[in-house]
Length: 102
Image (cartoon, rainbow, N blue to C red; front, side):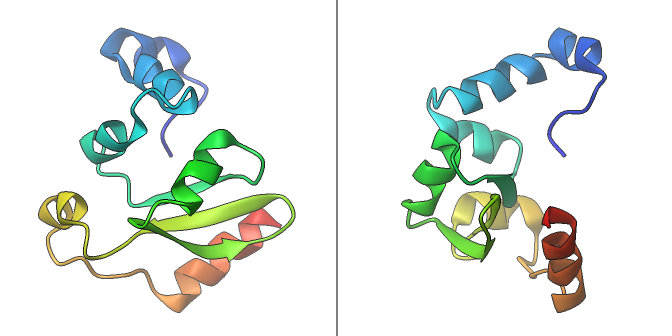
């Protein structure tokens, strides 16, 4: 989760600004790298969803009429350096995520 209801905490640390910049597509790649974002679950019609769906560094894991779950490709060095082994989540974890989206 990038943000929750404690907006005041995120505002003081600059995270809220980063999130709003991400939504506005103000150079999203460095922000996704900064926070080592590996998965994005976003509504289908959002501009960020469209951009990531058309970026070779991201792949769609799940999609329905409401949302899209994207994963950063494991060969992206920015995220591999941060995550260590680059292991993928289990099938059960992905199934749970897909169920939560419905």
